Amino acid sequence: MQKEYVNKYYITEVDAVEDSIYCHHALLGDSVITEHKHKKGQFLYTEGGVVFLKTSQKSYFLPARHYIWIPPGIKHSIHPSSPNVVMRNLYFPIFDTDTDFYDKINIYPVNDLLIELIMFTNRWNGNIFPADEIKYTIAKAFKLVLPELSSSKLPLALPYPRHDALKDIVAFLEANISENISFKTLATKFDLSERTLARLFQNELNMSFIQYYTILRMLTALKLLLDDKLSINEVALEVGYSSLPTFSNTFNKIIGVRPSDYVKNKNTLI
Image (cartoon, rainbow, N blue to C red; front, side, top):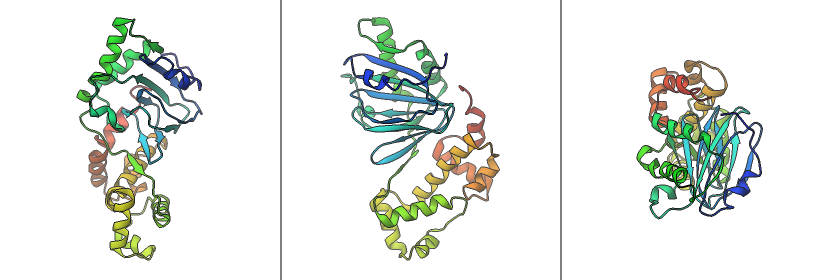
């Protein structure tokens, strides 16, 4: 594909034709796609770096070899981590055959078959109309096959804290990500009982401290592996893991691949 920079006006074109499937492939450069929403569901796959996708409730981290499905009507903004990020979008109208898979925003790993399908869409740009029966049928099949190829969603998102105390706690964890901070140490630091701190995380973020902290560390590791040219061992230390096997096992559990495989494959399509 010849890399063209994103046209900020494409967003207004997505819903211009109600029953079309709309395709848009572009190099993001320094662009930030400001908050917007579509009447169509969005398949977003990126190459060349992490993309941060923000909604009113969560910040999603979309790394290489993963895609995010965004249901119709979800307000979101898109923030590339690097000017080299290529964005591949397909926007689909609602079909009678849609299942509840398409009702939820989630991130999924991309297997080789889906990559082949994504690369096949390079030949498309703009609207695909139902009247173009062959092309439209292929594009529609792309959407219909997603649930079959996306069995394992990944928790690559963190909710925004609303509570002032929790905002300070999360900021402290982010600023000291290289330290292995215990729950007890955190409670003492912020003059809270462990019971109160546990309740804050569960009530405000709908997850435990250890769940939040582990995801935060793994998402930070993802960004470091992509952007900073550090070794895997150095990245492990940067996010508070003194044991490389423990870091590798945790990364594999959260991200779905081992750090070594992720580093090896991250530039596959760049």
